[in-house]
Length: 145
Image (tube, rainbow, N blue to C red; front, side, top):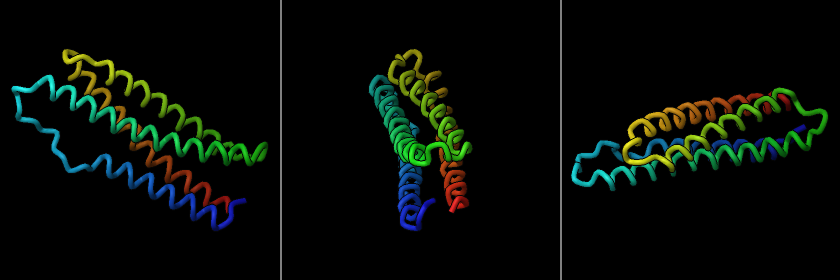
């Protein structure tokens, strides 16, 4: 059973995580580039920026997986099956994101347009799924009290 202090800590961590995801997605910089003379540099910069965003999301997911994994371990046999399923869903999303990070890192300038589109789609899908996951877990944990 979760006490109020633990719930407040979980809520604070969740708020920080969501704030981080929001800040990463809304950095205020335009992706539109008119510097056609520097395509190689643009490719490298775009790739690094996308990889950095995906790694930030992966790190946020890792934190949540650690937290939920500890809760499940502490609960032992009494762990809610829904929490275990949520944990596995998030692990699968993390794996998908990790594959996209590898694809982006290994992309060449010739393959960048396709890889960028695919990895941005993965990032957006996983980011949205992660936000939904966080809300679902908050609801589930608050109903357990």
